[in-house]
Image (cartoon, rainbow, N blue to C red; front, side, top):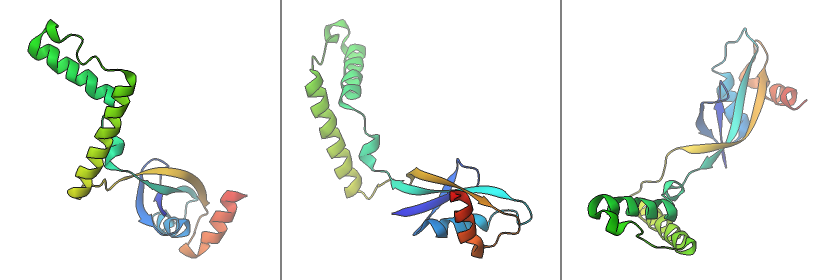
Length: 138
């Protein structure tokens, strides 16, 4: 597990081994004479297959492409069931995962979870981490 920080609660950055390390880095970017809030969160890795189209989406796209190319004769193609679309979705995700792994194309970004707000008092130093964590919890 790794952690990141934000100075505005929206734009998170960095990867640190502990929340305290992320907080210390954030404190380093604050204005020392002004009390402010910083945020830390857990980095949740993304996988390439998380962004693959669903089976339903691909079936719809295939239908639109066939209609554009062939016309009304392809109107009801493919006549798949919900289960068949789900099966296609699983196969697509597996193929995208294998493709990304083969070509070393794993996402270099992450989702943010378990965010915490920390109040950084004026004149805070990195050594004040315990104080800011306790203040945020209290």
